[in-house]
Image (tube, rainbow, N blue to C red; front, side, top):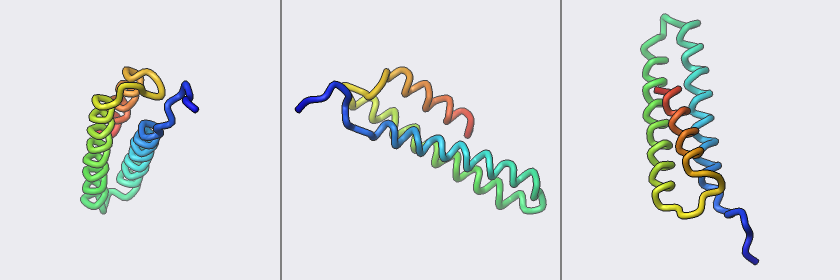
Length: 89
């Protein structure tokens, strides 16, 4: 039977991964402030998280370009992903 709501959960998964990246970045930044002696290690981790966040954003925008029906407004998905990416950047 056909449903009104698409069952493809990929956008929710991508948004969850992006949110988790934001949290990890914030936690690492807080650790950097508390443990400044090991700043090189923390900065390297933050840079890696930024690259991870960029990859998730790229996957999301590619998927938006390929998907006709999204689980909610495509502009909202794009805006939310862009804002989370901006936080990590």
